[in-house]
Image 1 (cartoon, rainbow over the protein chains, first blue to last red):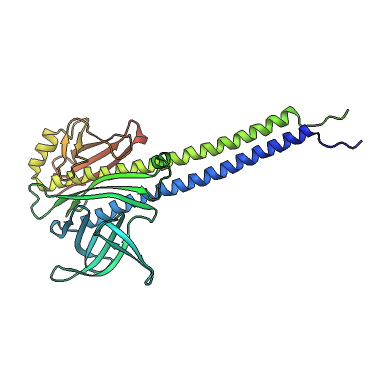
Image 2: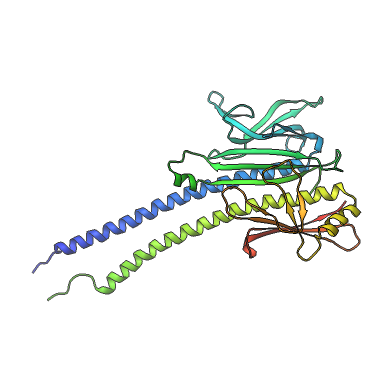
Length: 203
Length: 155
């Protein structure tokens, strides 16, 4: 006698199949979310490392008098650049980003409102100590990262004279985007860093 | 009568397999998040460690050897068994840092971790006017909650 499935067997089989599919889909969505979160947090950490490395490298090769603060949020290093094989001015600070669609170039401005990107701009340093003619500009943080705050302070300890100084700086980076709830806001990757670099001393 | 349907063993095996897959995904998530959190913490710790190294280097270069020894090795006891600790304001950037004999904690951002910066300074070799500085930044107890660095100070 030919025998098929009973209704109960069929329902159980379909139920188990749906359960397995649900688990598989949840796992896939969860893994994708995890990858996105991991990438965002890694980008924030990478941005922090890029800024600290850049400041440390420029400070180590500069003289205290060649480093000037423009407000609290922009620092200017004047000195010889091995990359350019010339004397240059390097500005590092909180910048406003814009994209020139006609030229296809990214632009960064260190003044005005809406500054939420860490950027560096390099100019030629002329003989009269004037910074002129832009050579390079670029972001220090990836597009998915926004800078909430950046503050520099230059301290010249007693006894340093013109030979050394101490830069202290503090910044906060955050994964960019619009938080849709308090929970997503809480989980958004944020990193606050405070550090210092000795100027004029090879460490 | 012909026996039909899954045996108990088959059902248990299938359910166990499903649970195993679920647990594996959860374990993967937890491990990845722990790795990223550790990376964030270490980035903060390295930045704080840079501050300790820079501060001591500036101190060394702005003082004579005798003044440096009196302050760092004498008054602050940085060559003692528990070393000395760096204190810097995290809100007032223009304030100078100082060396202390008691641990000073630093808390940054939303992190609940408290970072402590410890320095140990010793003249190496003795009488050479060269100093070996050993710095550590810790955020708890145990070797996995600490970064360390050593460097030489010489004029």
